[in-house]
Image 1 (tube, rainbow, N blue to C red):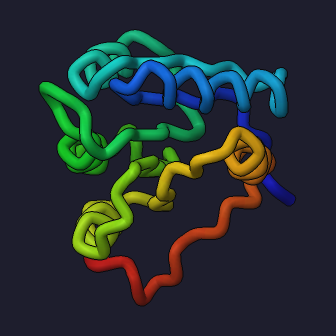
Image 2 (spheres, helix red, strand yellow):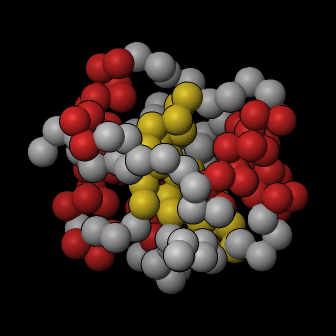
Length: 140
């Protein structure tokens, strides 16, 4: 049985990408609470003030504190050990993917270019159907 997702935190400095993603959550998963941050610094500050989310979605390339640096900080903090962390990036560079998986990302998703694809992705994420990367891609 899948654990129901109740709260997703999304951090992305691109306002359009942030709006597309959060609108898809609101349209497809209206019962899920969405909290947003516009960069990594805001995310890390905000996480200390809110309840523990089920999923954190991080844009890889954000100003001040990058998604990768947020990922590293969150994985060092035992409080986020069971929180799924998704990297959501325009980069499909294998080095970026491998590094993020190495540092503990549960998923690495290249941002889709259509609203339909974003909605499909969000439905899978909200329903707990997002496929984890195989263990051979995780570097510990």
